[in-house]
Image 1 (cartoon, each protein chain N blue to C red):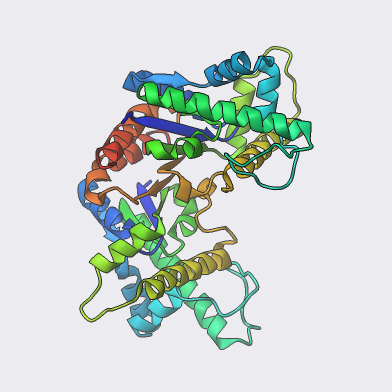
Image 2 (tube, chains in turn red, cyan):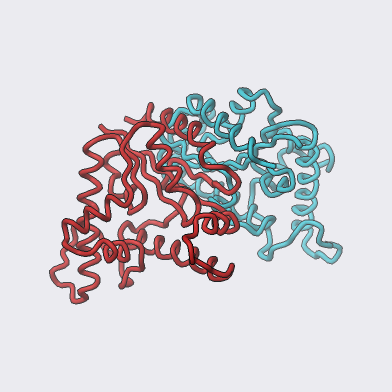
Length: 207
Length: 207
């Protein structure tokens, strides 16, 4: 069975960078935006639109599970959300079946539970997340502190809602991850090797 | 400044074993029951009694903070809880000031926040915790599955309440720890070295 690492991450925590560096260090495939590109190709929807659905709030308030029948759905937006989630699940499973890899976000820990991945959650203090966002801001991006804080909170709230909606779980609950790492005062590049070694030791005993 | 590692742990998760092994591997002091013994000595109370207070539910429902005046307290049990907590804080700070060490539980992450410790939370799935408890059961200890599950839940609920009461924080909230480790299918002795290496890399950048 492939060795799969999934990384859920708070916005601005550096989780994506950690994932990319881990994949490089471990010489395994890395999937992030590729998932969105694949969904867009297979569904015929624009990448930007798929991304907005995957990153944004679910337009409904009752939980659903994969495999449930949606023929009776009367909300076309919900129907589309679900179709995209099913497509996403198929793509993520196909990626995981192909080779060892690191997959960022998109409920991959839940979708791949039968693959027995090592699941990681990356978080950071608000101050650290704001600092990181500022360092990586694109030209012309000028948020006040309060706007930036709101943006970070909104993105994470939406990720939590999306995750809850499709998995029934609380995003960031320690019991659903093998490892939660707080990157607040840690340069990502410096923790890659020890995190990779710890992951390797965890795989040793995963049957 | 000393290098301090605090370990909060769910009952049956192996957090205490991890802490003991980490201290051994890193050749630093290890404090666990020593704290209770010290409190008992300094307060003149029986060790068993101190332990029952530290591990059990706080008899009150409003939060308090250290340093507050309790001269007006009319609940003698609450007064005693608080005195023990203050004594515990002093002892833990004295231990941390003395040398590098690993300290198990007892709100030490919060008490030592000015020491900038590396804080670890250790959890596990209920099945794994039950298995571990059975392996370590003392002779004559015969819980049914349901009794054992209840016992584990009760101990952890009490730890969470105690922690909340004295720190105002939610026990097991990922943001308050540098690292959360789920030990469910991992032999503790096998993850000691990589966890120690990761901790060492985290200390490198802690100023």
